[in-house]
Image (cartoon, rainbow, N blue to C red):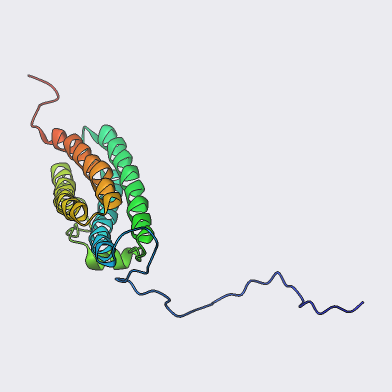
Length: 191
């Protein structure tokens, strides 16, 4: 029996490389009823918030692992819970960039290049310093998100505006409140 079919193989084609088919910082046309300018602006702002949110996620995980002191267990748990929420935001932000026709910052090394969140020391800081570092990162992201939400709303990008307001801002404000309350100087035991 003869056949013109090509032989098949279960061997994967390894070590493939290819050309970049869309550069970071560009947007392709999608039929989503938003102008090129609105989509480009939203992608730029979202990628900044995305890079910073990736760094905040990393800070939460680091501090979760190295937590110390009398409130270790409570903070260990809450920092992990907050990290999980930030990781969800990372995915949601990246998917919004892609929905707009852009390219989401996905490589942690790229995110580290463009983040505005300062790098923490490699070692362990005191607990109040760790919490303050997280609060400062939240405030930086919240400042950007408020500004970006207002501008994307003006440009008619209701989807990005909604994401920034209902998810990034509300999550960030709630998490900042939980962290800040741990910095109130209240003794565990009264003498």
